[in-house]
Image 1 (cartoon, each protein chain N blue to C red):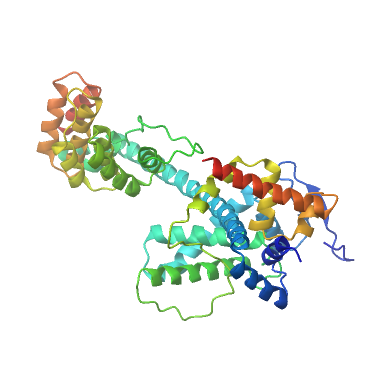
Image 2: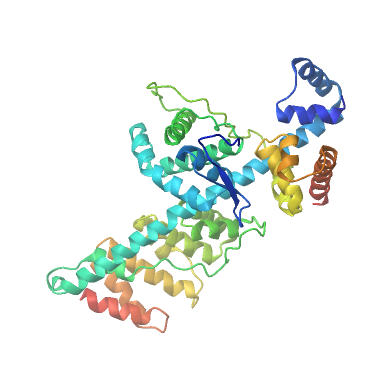
Amino acid sequence: MEQEEYIRKYFEGDLSEEEALAFQKLLKEDPAFAAAFDFEKNVKKAITLNKRKALKETFKAYEKPKKSYKWLYAAASIAVLVGLFTWNSFYSTNYDSLYNQYYQTYPNTIAPTVRGTGTTDLKSEAFFAYDTGDYETALSLFTKIYKSTSEDYALFYKGISLMELEQYEDALAVFNNGVFEENSIFKSYSRWYAALSYLKLENKAAATAVLESLTKSENPQREAAIKLLARLE
Amino acid sequence: MKKGKHQVSFFLIDLFTSCPTIVLMNNEKLLISRLKCDDPVVIKKFYEENKKGFAFFASRYQLDQEAITDIYQDAVIALIENAKKGSIDDLKSNLSTYLFGIGKFMIYKKLKKDKRTVSIDDGEFPEVAFDMYEEEEINLQLALLRKGLKKLGEQCQKVLQLFYYEEKKLDEIQELLDYTNKDVLKSQKSRCLKQLKEIIKER
């Protein structure tokens, strides 16, 4: 029997007992044959793992839209509640509903996620995790990136990831203590998200102070800050 | 598929998946045959239908929601894989029961890996042949192959996928892909492997 036939029969599960013995012997004695066999075993693994990954991504996508529908329902019901009971805010501030109205995940403006290009650098991996809602992974990757490059986008998205994970205190530490380039878009947005984190933590005084500072300069969130401030007062 | 006296089966070819549509079979068999050919609607339905039940079933093992979802997904993947290999064509139990069996097996493995006390003794595991392919060491050739495969031509992808992933014998592949004789298919397969070798060398 030709050498190739042994390998084929192995994968087809058709080796007889005798053939299996001869096959084992060949593997031991002929390194080239062993390498050819290893190569085919790796081909099998590679195809299988690729298939599994594709299915896994499909399944993860099933889980995603459901979540956003839930969020939509939640947002819709909050909107209705707010409409019906605005008088409620005369008596107390509903921090959660305010937060939900004003909080939005900051979009990925740095590295658009492109599938199948084969780039696997840290940055695109981090944003891929971020875009797919895997904030835990995103958090650890952005932390890593910031440690090695000190780029402020990494710091900023680390903060947002923390907010998504509902770790508001940690997010505040990032937004308050982090060094953002002066006049950069991240500088003003980090103030905005800090205000929202305070809001979520029901720290009205701190939230108000940060929002007030936002209303005093020209920045993209100035309008929003004025509106939110009015709701808080 | 033999035509029995009482069972009329006929085949339609699905334009998009080139997957035979088999009408008038018992439900379980039909479901398996649709899972085999990647019918996206059937896969999604199967996934959604069993999810809650699985989560309930898994809830007694003290795993968080995320871990349960992760295991559930892997279990469905394993089930589809085994369907494609034809190893559950003669399944005695119901497909959901089989799925839960795989899931239970995977939960057991996970708890063991996390070094947590395992007390799964109710019932038995089904025979689940599923290699997780967890590597202890880094396998460079494997990593290169996973990328390189995408660069192969369509025919090569089909042949290799049927042989290695779906574990079909060459005779079956010859029939499925309409090769006039086995030798042509054999040399096609060797050519594909050779191409793959070249592709991963180029890098």
